[in-house]
Length: 83
Image (cartoon, rainbow, N blue to C red):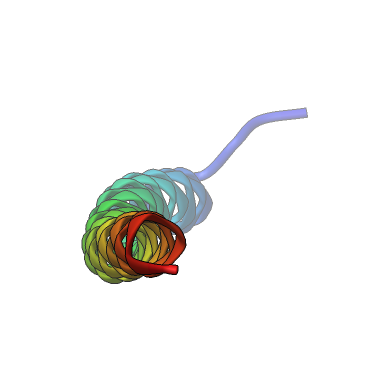
């Protein structure tokens, strides 16, 4: 069976277009993965920032609690010494 140049040209153009579409899809997939990775990194940074802020607040509260406890102990010692 002989392939006519017209049919061969159509087949070749089909495969060329298919190859172009595959390359385009690969580029799109890479771009999507990069965007998703960037978004995940942004979310992780935001989470870390919020956690650091939370820990700072908790540490400050703990310091205040310790200061109040020490003050109460001093007040109690003064009261005991006075009585």
